[in-house]
Length: 393
Image 1 (tube, helix red, strand yellow):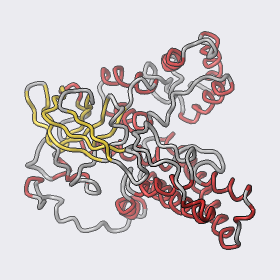
Image 2 (cartoon, one colour):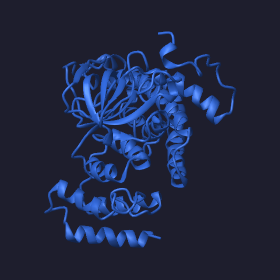
Image 3 (tube, one colour):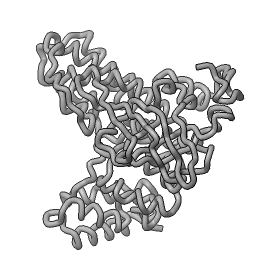
């Protein structure tokens, strides 16, 4: 069993062989991956050492103290938080070797082709079709709300391969090359003025069967691994005390006493406590991951994350008064990542509205928590045993 002392030794060996001050950033990250220090709980040869997940903090602390570069996780969050665990769980050995290293290093950005105009909250109703032709699958359809599609090389994609069975059973999971002919990415401009989301049109896109993840028709089960990891990565992010959205409003409160009122003080105290509870709950959730795959508790964390962000950003705008109505830049841009704390209060207020939609709507997550966590009776589902082709649309 690899312990903390062994990981420190290996990390110091990495730093000695590849000094951060004189080693190119990508070269250092590749060397770190090859040394098994990328994600230590992954298997040997795939960036890990088969060590307990909790020991990753030992490696990260040593590297941070030495000034080593990271892999810019915010930029490649979909790859790290969703694609990688799904590939690890369902990919072939060849797929793991081909995709995990450039994904972790950040050489290749990933996006997620799940939601559709007619299949958002009811994702299993998706209509994008995949038809087998020899060793390829021909894909036709439309996806929407696709973060980072404009900079992505690869996508995780679910498509319908059998319309004659109930909707959950006729889906297959693929890895799609976003540079292939027939893939068209169009920006979706948001209320912030930016186009961080996209819609993606797939017209006769050919995906080799070698890029299928899991068995044919088993895509819904594979997708559950992606979705549960997505919600953990959104709602259970590791942040310091007063990290995230509560940080800027707390800073403003301390530095601008003229803005304070008794009512705002009471609301800030309540939200500060809730933010701290959410932070500690996220830490507990990450510790639970050591024992296996994330459970449906991640849905509860993501649900709370969305509500808190919206309440905190609303309080911040109120606290700033007229200043809170200002907005820094409406320029149409297509950013590579979301920066909640690097912009002004107006941006945080507008962007947080999307938190209750992305990664699963709050309404859907409430159902998941009620049924899968609390054990309450499920809602009636009259279409459960109906073939997808016979569903009313």
